[in-house]
Image (cartoon, rainbow, N blue to C red; front, side, top):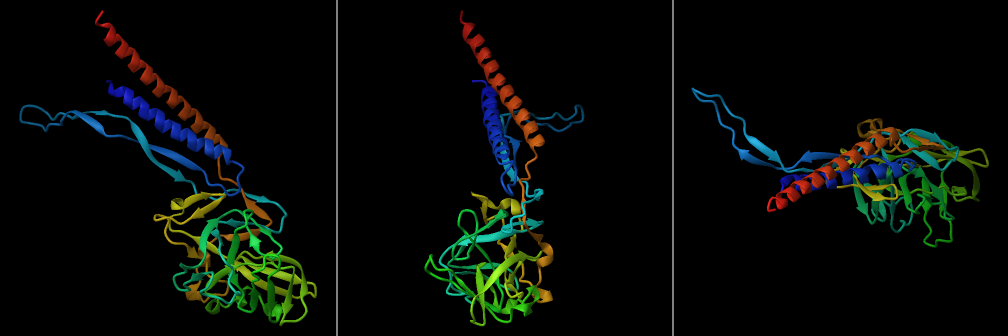
Length: 346
């Protein structure tokens, strides 16, 4: 059989895969925080027809003769650049302008927000790496969050959003899904991002934005509004005019973002080649423990759009389509040659 037939088949397979990648990019051109991908090719092993020879006293050197045996997929790379920011004016929409991923997950809630080893995501304050205590974290840049009747901050698929709790705020989590979690705070006007004590909060807990909070166990006070700062600290304004920092949205980074595994639903998981998640330090952390300079700003009322460049994708689609057709021609031409060989018997 002609080797060109198999080269053509490999070209069809490779360009079909490229069309698959391009098609997925175009389909997700409006997906929140979607990261586009590209397919790269490499040549396959080559068959040596003759070996190279070195120069002698009477003749020069001769190059080897090799015939390539086709193409194969070298890799599918993810472009991790930040997409454009789209204002939404919705107070539960968040975006990260720069490096970082929100931390989400499922699992049984802890008894309260002071827990550091039970149903939480433990944090080493020195290395900022995570230890899982009953929670399997996932990561996302899609900040279109919602709330439920318990006050949980959730993704659109119901995963809890994790972050730091203020050291002077106690969230008591209800195990009855019909009962709201309760939040108690001490001296709310004194609480802000700088007051969050990292020494007592070396864990990420499910974040809660309740309808009301209690101050030192008193009668619940209604929350009028809430906002987040660039550091992710969630600040609530109470009906009595006081304000309180309820917690801080956690952000993580990875040594190799492109190595994250895509889980669908705009979620990612760490892989063997992405590196361990590095969590942004809590607001007010000591200087030698503060790594917040390596993370982007949290923005409220904004969503990150897909980073797909449609002009580039349509160009790649044309190239892949023409390459697919050309490889088909290789196969049909090889077939004609084989037909001529068969006809020689006549």
